[in-house]
Length: 367
Image (cartoon, rainbow, N blue to C red; front, side):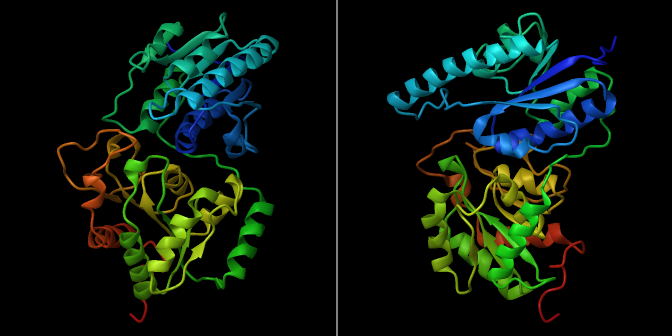
């Protein structure tokens, strides 16, 4: 028998990361549409709360300040700092949970730290994946769902919505981009010489995982080809600490490029991405944001599995080489064979297959 959330107080637990938060949004939208009278809150890492701000139908964002306590590459000092932050976060949110009285908790992350936050709601029905990591299902009283990494993460998460009787055939991503953010980024692009109607391509050359990095020469070659073939401007975006790396790619190019690393918050980043007609880059949160905004994607995959986190709702767009160790889901790798054997020509060929006739890039320059 399907259960109901009518009139219930519901807590979503998905703390991070940017891309994973985006992949949960269709489930949130399905729940909100089916249960307009439910109170839905979202527990999220403080540094990512901006992504959810302004989301239509989301009643409350509960931020918690956390550092990773599961990264095996972290130094002992950072690990203990993260553990101390986790304990503090649990104590602070416990007070909020007591005040809110959540009746249903939906635990999407499947880690011990996220399950601990769910467990603080002792009287609630706590749903999650029964094959999640780190013994986290032991802290749930409704571990009903199976995480199948042969299916896309979005479809795995939609099991929650289906359980509560929500239609899941139509998938949408309710990302909110304020007008002031769009205006700000339009001015930024204009200051770099972007003309109205001129194609803009977003290139994402960095990721949190060292194992996902391609080589700077490859990105420079692809970017130059896009400029020469289609008369496009290319945009590199990233964190402030990635500026030097992105400048290194631009220095290897024959043509100019816009480097916006460190210049934008999350909403500004989304506004920039929405102006683009194509995403080219590594598997990252930016890739998922691009698909959520309807931007065609060409993504380079190595250590991660595109069946689980590939570009959702798009045929093709994945560039990878078949090596025995891929996907390994390792954050670091000395060889990075799966990434470094990808050639610029492979990326350009996949790009031509993806854009087809739907993009301003479909007619090459001078055609």
